[in-house]
Each structure stands twice: as structure tokens, then as C-alpha cells.
Amino acid sequence: MRLFNTLTRREEEFAPARHGTVRMYTCGLTVYARGHIGNFRTFVCMDVLRRSLKYVAGWDMHHVVNFTDVDDKTIAGAEREQLSLRAYTDRHIDAFFEDAEALGLERVEDMPRATDPENLQAMADVIGALDERGHTYRSDGSIYFKISTFPEYGKLARLDHAGIQVGARVDADSYTKEDARDFVLWKATKPNEPTWDYGVGAGRPGWHIECSAMALRLLGEAPIDIHAGGVDLIFPHHENEIAQSEGATGRQFSRFWVHVEHLLVDDRKMSKSLGNVYSLQDVRDRGHRISALRYLLLSAHYRKQLNFTWTGLEQAEEALRRLTDLLVRLKTVRGGEPHAEIAQRVNEARRAFDTALGSDLNIAAGLAAMFDLVRAINSAIDLKQLGEADAALVAAAFEHFDKVLGILSLRRAEDEQPAVPVPEIEHMMEQRQAARRRRDFAEADRVRQALADRGVLLEDSPQGTRWKRK
Image (tube, rainbow, N blue to C red):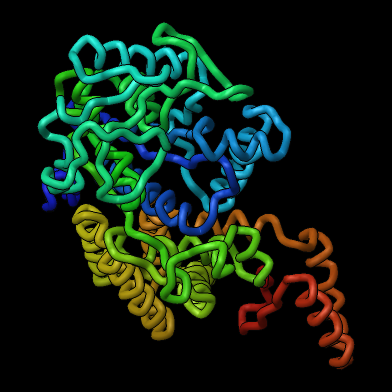
């Protein structure tokens, strides 16, 4: 497995440092709003990375994805809606789990909340260690990290040290790129804000300390193997994580840093003012399936910007349909002798796929290997050069591909939950067949259209009629 390491700006051989288990941390949502498709591009790409590490490289995983449930935005949102912080963030966390399931994201080993008591204590412990090593100072009830005490500050983002504002500080949980200043670790709380005291004084955590503490608490002694997130987190968040983690432990924080590029919408950055910030429900409301969205989100290399368009989503649906249509055709193959050339072609495709995904998640090459196999197998079926044993071998290869991509299993799960109950669909299909037998084609068309209006399409073929969701 080779991965591009943001820290070194080069592709490097990757293997876990300890016991064959990859210790990986992904920055999760700040739960002040429902996640949008830009957020989920990162989570889908990191899901593909997780699956590649497991099913291609063969390693075990200890993967942590956090929820930031206390920061400036969550506090402001809870106050605006007159809810407790926990009640306000619970709503958005529940929405994340709903969307993650719809997108087929594998459940990771740990999903901590910043406000869990054990995590707050871990934050206080990191701050205590930083204090002992001379990296902190206090002002107006808050505790700050003094970046002048960490000479390597800026190594991830490649900051120009001449531009660092020595002695200036920032209280906000996020700030302008290149505006490097001392950052807050533990914030003095304003009236009516949530507050805790775990040994460093009453207050609440700054954003950056949360991830450092949760990563080290749950994944164990530094360095962890991989720290991942969106490219927008490189500075200041991940840069500050490095400073406080390495300042507290005296050891490298993470061996690899992996970052996913931005998702654009119609070649423009997503923003509320442009009205192009889409949720999964927006995708459904346009008549698209979430399995097609997953396909689209993973279809471009994670280090390249992806431009989301509704036309692109339709193309993703067509690509996914080509895969599912082949799997349906495989089930119609009966008897016949196995063909050595088919086994060879399948093995070549599997090797090409695994090599591609093991090369910094070269998804384009992986998908090309899949679709080359689709064309070859469709041709073999047309020429009646595919036996039943060959079909089973091909089906097993696509199950292997899908362990990494997670698109076919997601489509199957969607098909098992149609808009119309399956017994009703089957009854209406029988009604349509009866109408066709008595040559009442108007009635047959009426039944077909009634199902289509409810999101169920009927497809006729020499092998019979099958249904699928619209």
C-alpha cells in the first residue's frame, strides 16, 4: 500500500507500525448542522481508504471518527434554538448516522463526542503536559498555546515563519488561512455557556485540543498511523493538532496525513448564498438514488477536486446500472464448461484493481479494470462462451471489488426497500402479465405507468420481466 503523505508531500510505502492494526483518526463533523455532500465526499473517500486497508492490504483497523459537539457554532446554535447543547447536537449526530447508513459507510471502531467526560479529562491531561513543558500561558481565564515554543510549527501547511504573528493570539475556534497566531486550548466561558472543570480551571475546550486528546486516548501512544480529513483542515486545525500533541508528548503525532480535496458544485464553491449546499435529502428529492451519489463521490481521485453536477449524477447512475445489469445476466447463465481464458481475465482484473487501490487509491484505474471486465464478460455471454462456473467466478470478483467500493451492496439494500411493498409489486406485475396475455395492452401500460409513478420501473427482456427502483 502506498499513500500520499501531506506532511512530506510525496507518496510513501505504508504499513501499520504495530501488530498489523492500522490506527487511524478522521476528523468528523462539527455538529451544528446536517452534513452536506461536500462533507460526505470526505467520509466516502475515507471509507474507501478504510476498506482498502482492510480488504486489499489485509490489515485490521482501529479507526476513530469524532463528533465536535462543543465549539463556537454549536454553542450559538443551541442558544438560538433555546436547547441544551446535548439536545441540539444529538439531533445532528442522529442525522449523521442516518446519512452514513444511507451512503453505506462502514461503522468505525470508535465515534467519540468531545463532551464525553473521559475525553474532557484527556484534554485537561494534554493541557497539563503542555503546561509542564512550557508551551502554555494564561490570559483572562483562558489557556493558550504559545507557538514560539514549538520551532516546527507550520511544517504540515508549509507556513512562512516570517509571517507568523509572534505574541498575537486568537480566541476563535477557526481563523483565516495563513493567519498563524497563538491559539486557545481552554476557553474562559461566558455567562450561560457550558463549562467544565477537569483540573485546569473552569471553562470549555477550544476546537483544536479536542481531536488531539481523543486520538491519543483512543488510539494509544504516539505516533498514530494515519490522520485524515478534508484539505481545508490542514491549517489551522491539523497544524495546531501537531503542535499541541507533539508539544505534550515529545513524539511525532501521526506518521501519515491524508487529505481529501474540495467538492465543487457546477464548478463553484458551495455556499448558502449560492443555494448550492445539498444534503442527501436534496439528492433524493431530485429523483436520484444515494447509491449513485456514493459512486459519484468516490469516482474521482481523493486528491483532486470533484465537480458535482446533476448530469454527472445521472452518468453515475448509468455506470452503476451497467454493473448491476451484468450481475443480473450472470444469474441467467446455466450449465456449460468452464473456460480457462475467463478465469485468467478475472484474475487479471482482480490484480489490476488491487494494484490500483494500493497505489494511493487510484480509483480511476480500479474502475477501469472493473469496466474492462464488464465488457469482456458481456461479450462472452453474447457468444455463449461463459459457463455457470465462470459466472460464479465473475460474481465473486465483483463481490471483492464491492468490499472496497460499497456501491453494489448499497444498491441491493436500496432495492430491498422499494417505495412500493414487494408483494404489491409482484401482484401488479401478475396483473400486467394477465392483461398482456388477453392482449389488453392499454391495461398493461396503465399498470406499468402506475408503478413508474410510484418509483418502480419494469424492464422486459427475453428472460422475463424484472423491476427496479426508479
